Length: 101
Image (cartoon, rainbow, N blue to C red):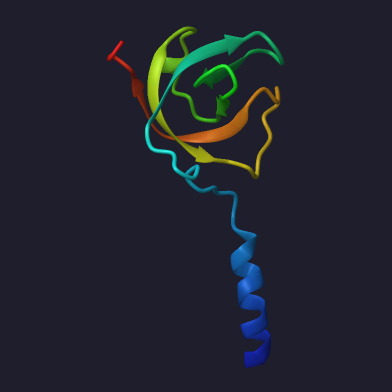
């Protein structure tokens, strides 16, 4: 492959990305409430407020409790769709029980 071909293909290959996502812009640690929704066989979401809902891909089993207050850092997974399509699909970078009330 010629040097020119490599120079032209490099940006294309780099832009394809591989299934990852980026931290949601400006997202630091968020607070929300875990809810179980009885749709599509059951799905867990984290509601931050009335209009902002996330559907985490990797919510630990011990935190799958309806009404549990949590602190978390989301990572966008815009390359995926949730089966229930009830919120923005995210990967949890960190998550913990919110004991601040």
